[in-house]
Image (cartoon, rainbow, N blue to C red; front, side, top):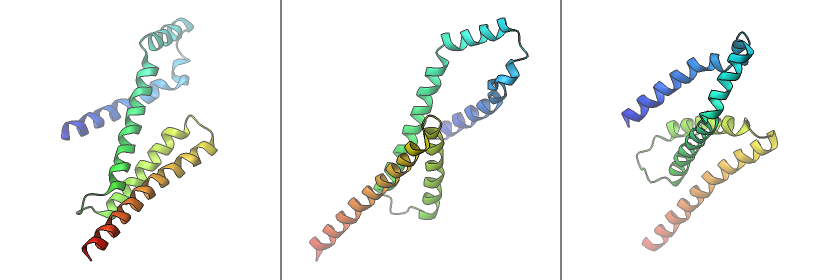
Length: 136
């Protein structure tokens, strides 16, 4: 898992450095031919599709964490830390989702996240009650 964390850290640093180059203002100083050449390279290399797939995988990874946290199963969980983490993840997912949809869809997205967590909590509570009733 440490290698995974190192890769994410390196990628984040590279993306921060790349942000300046992605601003259209910085490319306006280039000649139209250079701008066309850069744009053709980006499009022909499938950069947009690759980046979209990577962002989708990040989103899926974060959703899997929400599902795992909601399902419980870890008796030694630090609920304060987990709650903070879930808040941060929800914020990231909201930003990822909001960038391509109107506000009303973004609100539905947040409601879906809350319902997912609530559903898992309800299932856990029901299983716990049934277990207690069986042992009584």
